[in-house]
Length: 153
Image 1 (spheres, rainbow, N blue to C red):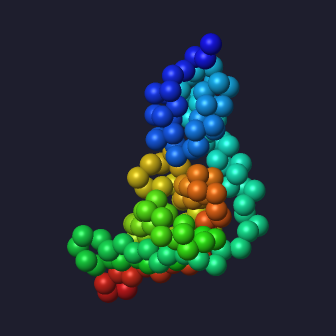
Image 2 (image 1 turned 45 degrees about the horizontal axis):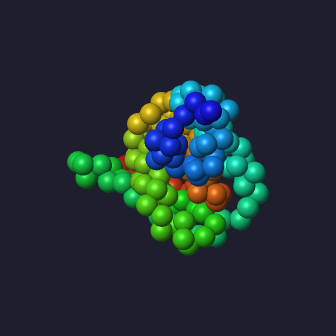
């Protein structure tokens, strides 16, 4: 008898974006412990993302963020493998979050940006956010370049 219900599987799937079978396996491994199942799913997603790092990225999206005062803006070129993913809502939302990060935290290089803690959730770095989505959607995601503008600079 399992220690979880179909509602648990559905909830885990909605929260993590993982497949049904991955959610079931994580819940089985964690013996129904929901928090541990989330950790298992996230760890597997990171592993999948690491395996995709040698893939080529030829598609993408230029995300933008303009601060409410209109004096600071950022553009980020976020790359992926296919045009299908480039049109994905989550991919584009990630791009906008990264553009906001660039506007707020003023990184000098892509490497510095990737190492920064995400301003909306300090538990994750930008690199970890990208790998989490990469593991979820099954494609490599990379920041190619970015630019930040501020009035008077």
